[in-house]
Length: 616
Picture 1 (cartoon, rainbow, N blue to C red):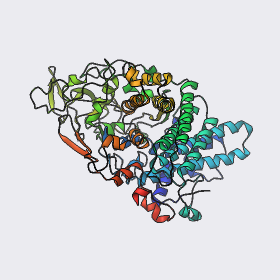
Picture 2 (cartoon, helix red, strand yellow):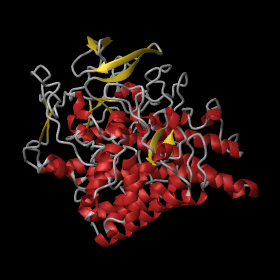
Picture 3 (cartoon, rainbow, N blue to C red):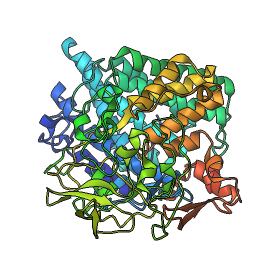
Picture 4 (spheres, rainbow, N blue to C red):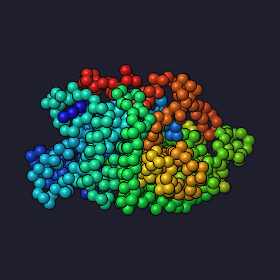
C-alpha cells in the first residue's frame, strides 16, 4: 500500500479543509462537522456518510474552482496575479503563489501540489469509512452507500488526474492519514509510474460510473455521465501522451498502438455521455438574441451559461456549487474578471489582444481580416477599416465575442454597495472619466489593471445585489460542449472527420450564431483538428483548459516559436509593445514548461521522492 509524506503546511490545509462546510447541498450547510465527533459516535448511518461526503466536496472544490488562472499560461489570457490571500482556504488559497505567465511557470505550484494531496486524503477518509460500513450494512442501505463511495472515488480520481497532468509520475496512496507520527512509511514513498496511477484513476472512474445514479442529482452532486466524461477525458489525455510523447517524463515510452486504443475508448465514453443521458446544451444551444454594438441590454445565451441561472443545467455535467451571500462560500469571479466600477473588483485576469482575432464572422463563418492596432489619438483611428479601436470593426462576430469581451465603447453594468449604478462604457486607458456618447453623459468603466485593450464580460454578473466575493455560480469542471469537442478530437484521430463529430462541432458553433463548417474545414484530419482547436479556444476561454491542451498536444513551440528563437512580442489595441514571451528561451526552459517541479520541500523530507529530469 503506497503512501505519501505531508509537510506541516499540507496538514494544516487538510485539517482546515476537513472542517469547511459545503455548498453542494443547501440543507447540509449547517450540519455539525464530522470531526467534532469521535469515530465511535460517527459513521453509523447513511446520513453520516452523506455529511462526510459533503466535506470531501468542500476539500476538492478549492483545487478546481479557480482553474481560470491556468489560462494565463497560454496565449489568449493574461493573469496579473491571484486575488487569494494566505490563510484563505475557502476561496482558492491553493492557487495562491502560482506563476500564471506563459513561461517560467512550472516551478511555482508547490502549494497547489500539497492542497491536491489534502483533497486526496479527504476523499480517502470517506471511501475507507464507507467501505467499513458496507461490511455490515443492511441490504436496503447498500446501494446508497456504494453511490456515496462512488462519488468520493470520482472526486479522488479527478484530483489524481490533475496531479498526473502536471507532474507525471506521482506518489499514490489510498488510505487516509490521521497521524504522521504513526506512519513512518510516508517518509519513504516513491513516485508511482504514470501508467499505474492512470490505471488506479480508471478504476475509480469505472466504479463511480457503475454505482452513481443515471439521473443528475441536484445541488452539484455527480451522476454516471460525470464519471464517464472524466473517464473519457483521462483516456484522451493518455492517448495524447502516447501519440505525442512526453520526453520530459523519465521512463515514459509513447506507443501509437496504445494511443489508438485510448482514442477509441475515449470516443466510446464520450459517445455514451452524449447519447444515453438526455443531456443538452444550455438553452438548447440556441444563440439567443444580441444587442447592437455599444449596448448590453440584450446579451446572447452564451453569456447566461456563466450566470447562476445556469446552475444545475444539463450542460454542466459536473460543477462545484458556491453558497453566495452571507455564506463565506461565494465565488470570486466578478472580483477576478472585472474592475473597480463593479463592487471594487480587481481585474486579476484579462484577455490578450490576440483573442479578439479568434472570433469568426457570422456572415461567412470564417475569420475576419486581422484587427489593426491604432492609437486613438491618430486621426481617423476610431473609424478606420479594421482598426482595433473602431467599435464597428467588431460587427457581425461570433455571438460568444460580445458575451466574453468588452472592447472600446461596449457597455457593462456598474455596481456599488449592492446596487446598480447604471451602464458604464469600457474605453481602454480611461478610468472613471466623463465621456459623452450619442448625446448622453457617462462615466467610463474603471478598469485599471488591464494592458491589452480588452476586459472580460464572461463570468461578470449584470445584476446587482451581491458583493464581488458573494457569487453563487456553480463552477463547471465538465461541460457538455467540452465533451462534444473531445469526442470530435478522439474520433478525428482514429478515422479523420466523421459526420457525427462534424455535427457536434457545428452545434457548438451554432451558439455563436455561426454557420456550419465549410468544406475546406472538414477536408482532412489536420483541417478538422484546426477547426476543433478553434472551437476549444473561443468556447472554453478562461475556463482553465488551454494550457493543458498545449502541453498534451506538444504545441508550445507551435504557439511561441522554437527554442532560442525570437519568441512572441505581444501588443495592445493601440499598437504599444507589451510582454515578450519565449524570446531566446532555452531548450531546458521549454522542457520545464512541459512538466512541473516536484516540490523541493517534499523531497527534503523524503529522499525517495525523485525529481522530474528538467528540474535536476
